[in-house]
Every structure is written in structure tokens, then in C-alpha cells.
Image (cartoon, rainbow, N blue to C red; front, side, top):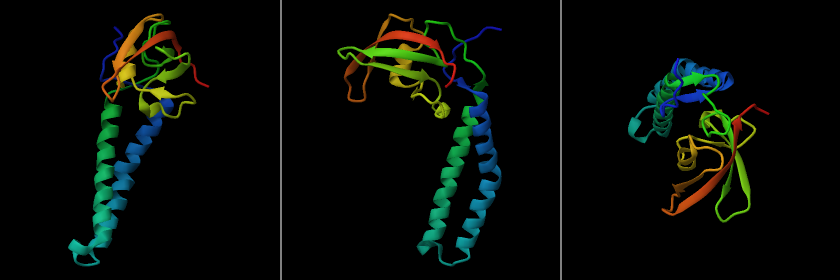
Length: 166
């Protein structure tokens, strides 16, 4: 089997996958039933144009449906386990240390899906500007990316090792 670093693949730990799957199961089952009951109860209160409870319940329903779609997309493209990693090459599942040009401070973070936010280390998405700029690069290489204000920032990759947890 050839291992690739496809942009649409989200690498998740088994724990994160299970947590997201449980959330999806709840929202698409009991969560939908609960919100439908809230909407029905609010409907029974009368005029829907001036019914704050009804409008709040409908807004909550929209948020639930949006989250269900988001979770389905993540889980549909998820790969559980270890991302393909090569020591010294930045990629998902790697603990990366970079130095920002013009700054003596080093920053260490996990390059992974935001859904791994339970990690005891800062998590940067491979799809973020910094993550995209350094993904696939080797230790010692400099990478430049655009900041939200339009300016450019350059970082030097100091270390890239597989994440082993806390």
C-alpha cells in the first residue's frame, strides 16, 4: 500500500475518532429528537412570528445540523492511527519546533487536525497558513507564509519528530 499525504485526509487518534463518532451518534439521534421536541413545544405556544423560544430552537437546530455535516465530513475522510511520518520531515502527527525569523524564541507544536485539541500541546492544522508552508519540508529548511494582514513570515524548521503523546 502506498502511503500518501492527501490534503483531504484527516489523521485522528483512536480516542479522537471515538469521541467524534459518539458526538455524531448523539447529535443525529437523541440530539435531533430533543430539538424536534423543543420546536414542537414552542409551536404549541402560539404565534410563531413573536415566539422567541421557537426561533431559538430553530437556530439551535441549524447549528446541530451544521455540526452533523462537519462531523460526517471529518469522519468520512478520517484515517485512524499514525499518519505516514518520516523523522526529520514535517507532516501530520509530527511534533515540530520552528524559529521565527527575527525572533530568538522557538515554538513547538503538534501538526494535526484541530479535532486533536485534547493533546497536551498546541495543535496547528496542516491546512493553516503555517502548517501548509512547512508540511513536507525537512529540518533545516526555511519556509515563508502569508499572515492575515498580508505580510509574510519566515520560519526555520528546527526539529520534526513523531508525536508520542504526553
